[in-house]
Length: 211
Length: 336
Image (cartoon, rainbow over all chains, first blue to last red; front, side, top):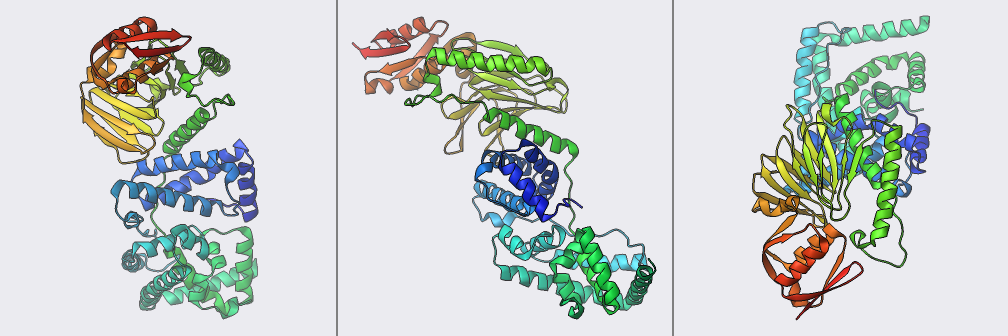
């Protein structure tokens, strides 16, 4: 996916950057700019605004690198900083509760066909319904799911990025999983996919035993 | 290990499981493969949980490599601008524009020496123009745009301005821009905190005195300050952005008043004397003291030629009916 660095590599890169290594700073940009852009664009559908905030963010990082704290997850650190910056900027412009704007247009992705599953068309139909349900979730809950499931943040990190309590994160995950379960379970049972899953599982097992 | 007792839901909530599905590392792959071999009865649950977790995916829009390259260029250019060495002057709290002439000249020489050396080594490095006090320079850019740089100002021009989709320059001081129209290529003037974006137009930008002042002569420009929503300006508009408050004020003005400096005069259009004095200080690199506080608020009209500092300031003295004395670089007005 994006940044396959181990926590140790994160710490090393971040520490090099903080001690004034310009290569480390370039590397930070190469590794995280696109990723931050994607998150930013899901938060606010305004390219120019996201770009300007990233511009300010990287300048700020460079300027105050000696004063920054340590981290072993740079993505978490930068997400938090970018979200705050976007929130401030949007708040200044609209003089309204700026939270209201964030993550407004982010949508779940309808996955491409899973070749392994039996009936593509039926699965596709079920998936669409499921995605529709998920898209009905409040956007704050969606953002939590995004941070945890797509960006691999831990629960405390997701809570901190969004400035909410851990309890909200847990609750959201439970709600989302319940939605998934009711819809997926239903569809799988109906379409007999469960059997194919068992089949897949068994062949997987056999494969692993052979290798 | 608790995993053998895990339900589908438990797997879905487990960070190590999530990472294995979304962003696997070799260690995670090995771990979960071994786990499935040890606990084959869990394989169905794991498959189901995998399906759940991989359904939680959002549509994402990738920035184009061009966007990323442009943003990078912008960041690095600003970093370069910030890292111009500052020569500490202990015990003196003078504005940079009030520094003695020789210091400014030395800095200028240093900057231009570095600039020249750099330029020689790297043929495609950005060009920087700098005018001395009392001097105006007309610059024709590679894209055909004409920039008139007022005294004591600098303009940095991005590389390859003639064949880039975004033409960018960085301004300190004051300049008048006559931008050549180019299909699909916008022109951005960066000043501290403010960006002026145009398609093809004429306008004046002044960044002195802790504020950025943009006066639009003709055409259309978009002004963006500190990431606030863009303000679109019409001809005859003057936008003033005060750096400290980050506030944009828009008002109608007579544009000729604001770019008369190009023809080496300033138009006095009812501004208080203090404003005119500030302009002259910036232009000539001198200090002007008003002995009388009341003098500062005196409003003036007329025209003032600005070719020669001494003449100009003497003429000003005549207009306000004051005596002027000069010591070094400092002029002092005394009301008769």
